[in-house]
Length: 150
Image (cartoon, rainbow, N blue to C red; front, side, top):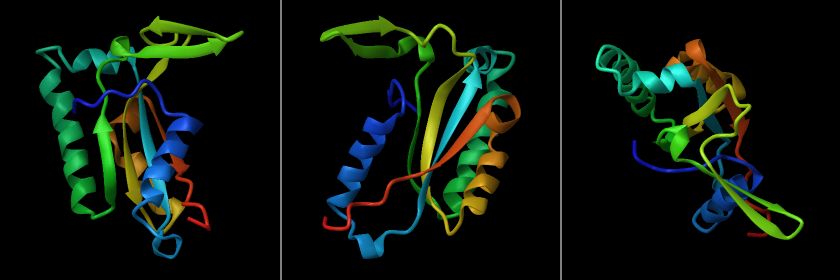
């Protein structure tokens, strides 16, 4: 779990869609969902706390193993701590770069999976099984299909 992604937004979804469109035809597209895992700082702190790390990582490894064994996983990554993020904004034509998570955020993105599922209900079922669902929030969002004309 070493990938770095400062945040998921429309640009990221479009870039992902564009990449996927280069190797998948629309008629082959099965509905995909992003499961985005948001956790409060206290959960991130458990990652490196000797007294809590085994339980924290153990619950995630069990969930990841079960999800991978389900055959639904297209891709996914855990993310480094929010403090390693860089936030980029363009205001009045000037680029602003800030280190760390947005100051008013109570929960921060910790990782994500893209899954192929037959229904939103199935995607929600897997989201509810994740460790983040009990301590934070899991966002389930449909991934945009590739453009009809390729």
